[in-house]
Length: 313
Image (cartoon, rainbow, N blue to C red; front, side, top):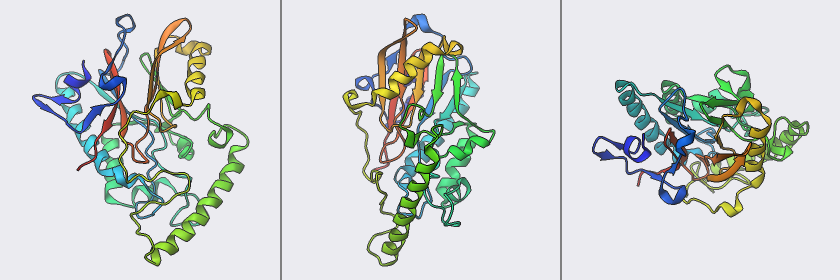
C-alpha cells in the first residue's frame, strides 16, 4: 500500500490538509528485503505528544490544534471503515503525553491536573478522546501523563511486526525521566513553578490584561502559530537516536525490529542511515501535536513518512 494513493487519497479525492514533510516530501521506501513489516495491520498511523490541558486555562496550547485533530480522527474513522470493507486493517497509536498532568488541577489546587477534568473541560476535548476510543487507539504513556501507567489501557511500549513504538523519555535528562530517582523532587519544584504561574495568570485574565484563549506557560512555545516545517536534522538530540539504536542491539526480543518510532522531543526526524546488529535500521521521531505542531506518522509495508495536518484556514 502507498501513502499517497491509499491514505492521502480516497477514491478520486485527495485530502489536501495532509502533507508529507520528511524525506523532501516523499515517503521513505522500505527495503524489499525487510518486508513484510507489519504483522497485525496493513497501515499504521502514529500520533505523538498532545499535552491536552484544561481548555479554558491560558496554560493550554493544545486548543490551537484541536480542530485539526478532530478532522484527522474523523478522516481516520472513515478510512478505517473503508479498509474493513476491503478486508484491510488500520491501526492507530498515540505515543504518550496525551494529557498535560504536570500542570495544576483546577478543581483541586494542591494536586496536579487529572485526565477526567482535562477531558471534560471542553466538548471538543471529550469528543477527541471518544473518537480515539472509537478507533481503538493504542495509547502509551509519557512523562507528562506518567500516572496513567496504572491503567490497563496504557502501556510503556509496543511492537507491531518489525516496528517498535515508545514515548521516548528513557534517554532524556533526569528531570524528564520518571525512572530516575531525582525525578520526583524535580516535579515538586516544577509544580511549584506552575502553581505560581497559574495564580498570576488567573489574576491577569480577571483584570482583562490577557485573554483566556491566549497562551502563557514558561518554557512552552505558543501554539497559536502553526509550525509545519521539517527542521534540520543537524539540531536533533542525538542521545535519543543513539539510545534506541543501541537498545535494539542489546534486546534479543527486538532482533527483528527494523524501525523505531518515538515522540517526546517535539522534533520530527527520520534517520534512515543508522545500523543495529550489523543491519539497516530506521529511526523515526514523530514530532508532536502541540506547541503549534500537528505531526503524525503513516506507515505501510512499503513506505513510511512523517506528515503534517494543516489547520483550517
